Amino acid sequence: MKWCIIVNDAPFLMEFLGKLSSRFIEDGDECMLAFDNKFAEHAKTKYFPKHVQSVSKVDWCREHYDALRKDYDNLDWRPLYANFDRMEHWLWGYRESARRLSQDYQFFEYVCQTERPDAILFETPSGVAALVAYSLSLKYGIPYLGIIDSRIAERLEVRDTEYTDRRYQQTYGALRMEDISKEELQFATRFLRGFLSHDRLPSYYGTGKIRFTILGYVNHYARRLREIGRSLWRYFWARKQFHAVDFESENRLRVALRAPKTVIVRQFRIAFQKHFYGKPDLQEEFYVFPLHVQPEASTSVQAMAYSDQAAAIRNIAFTLPFPAKLYVKEHPIAVGMKPSSFYRKIQNIPNAQLIAPQESMPELIRNSQGVITLTGTVGMEAVMAGKPTYVLGNVFYEYHPLCRKPKSIDELREFIRADRRNGVPRENLKQDNIRFIVSYLRNTIPGSVPAAVADPDTNNYQQIARDLRRIAQMRKSSWR
Figure 1 (cartoon, rainbow, N blue to C red):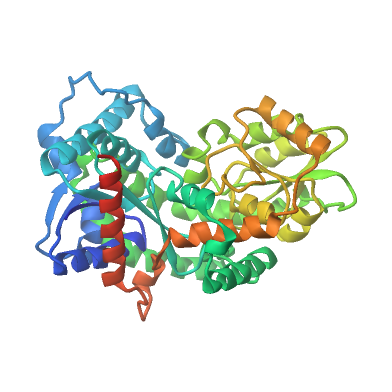
Figure 2: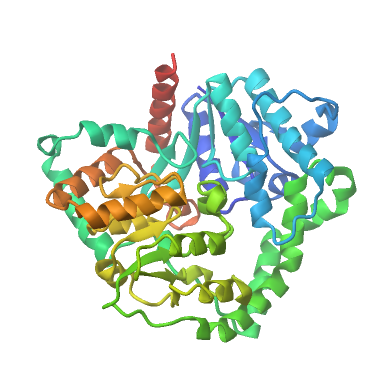
């Protein structure tokens, strides 16, 4: 097989893909690297085999980009939104933004047409490059394998769309309880118990370190400069040659320069925003809305229409049945990331109340009427706990029987009314949960992206390569 691996400066994933590419080559496969930006070329090349074929998007665009081209099939502006949403202030006007999008399109069109890989391997579609590459992979019939750590520890999702692997729902629909092995049943039971109690959660559920002493942050920033400073300097020294065709490196440079101010502002916010949070009254009638960390793909890609969370919360709150309240719970990782003006908007809604991140989510879910979310994993927790979940974005768990997917705020109102009027059937909840977990388990593969930088690295890259090869060939044959 010929693999096209897209390389950006994402931590962990590039180290993982580097080791995986070495395994592919050892197995007799062919690999080519498509470097997304100059910073990635400087910082991540060392993780990949030395003599592997590579092509630089920046260099290719400098030589081949056609600024006069007008025909881009069905391309729209949507892929740019994920990057737009990540920036506090968008720095480019129409011409620069159009050039960014068209450059990505022309480059990945070249990759698909000329290099003709058998599969594209990268992160799940979450930015301009990934979304454009994904859309062109569909046009040219090339499987796009988006790798992400699954909700099950030490296992990987290999998605074939922007937000899911379609095999989950297919497996669930055909799966009967008598088809489930004793080992699968035991695993599903343990997973369900640990997930709902929060005793065992995916690694990304950790709160992370959000408080620094001055000395601690100086040491942290110095260490990061040692890690990426050389790559930043190399780009900065040559940026006159590249800045017109390398938007990602430009953004990376600005983020690095802005980092000290960003952290200091966050520390002040943490200290002065505590008064916005209230205590939940579990005797009230309420629904739960878990706030998302922003910016991230879960909002800007999977729930673009609702990525203005303050506006979404306002519309949801006024949709609820009287006299229910909407408890808006902050995400532990997001403390200090939002301006006070955001919380004041929520505070001003008469039936909305902000809830502190340290409050127990299992307790809130247990006493709620249901959960309303854009794409959060809290929704998966809620349906398995027997509570209806109303998902406004696109999520992999939407095929669970207690998950509702309204297409609009008006339809959300109707779903909530129907559940209040008819009740929520829970008599088959245990079986539904087991079938749900097993359908998910069967379509993930053993492995972990962060393990690539751990000592020891527990990944079996030979097995991962074999699994990915099988999945790519299966998806290729399904299109014929």
